[in-house]
Image (cartoon, rainbow over all chains, first blue to last red; front, side):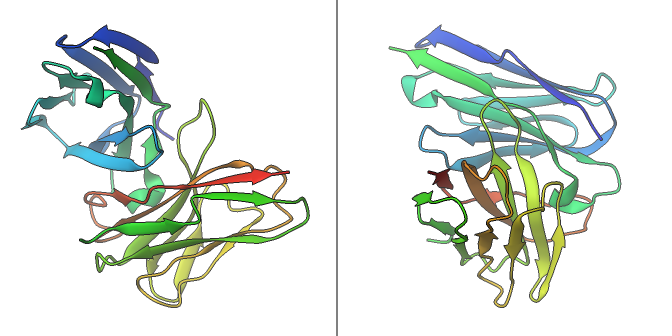
Length: 112
Length: 116
């Protein structure tokens, strides 16, 4: 099974800072998901990507397939961005969500 | 608005009791999943269902049971056989299963179960 490592585990920053969260995995994948878990516990899907880069508002996700690495960037961070950010990977051959491997998450706090 | 509804949000159980967590979706998704989340660990798959009247065990199915009698509903029962049931439980759905990837995953708000 894939090993998924996220860094940092915890990150505290000031409002307005540029944030980077990293995700590395050990085995080739078909897709990578970035998820946001808000303090109440619910999870929202932010991105699903298999190559290149995607942007949505202040969030940017990139993936380097050769290096088995993805980054999630937040520009002009705001206290409402405070959440746990989770990386999950799908193995080659699909296999649906039964094959997803999840990272342990990065706990981000943005202070005003 | 379409989405996934989990209930109850908080649940307390005495040892030896079975409890059932509800998960309902109105997204018309075929695939539904139950995950367990423990502090400091990634989500782990309990059960998943590709289609009505079919479900498969995930990585940690022991002590749990599910049913899928309707497309929109996938309840999870935590039985007394589950040795350490205190955890946060998340239900999810996706449009298709078994394709190259699941497509986007949609999650509920979760149910927090505490065994007294």
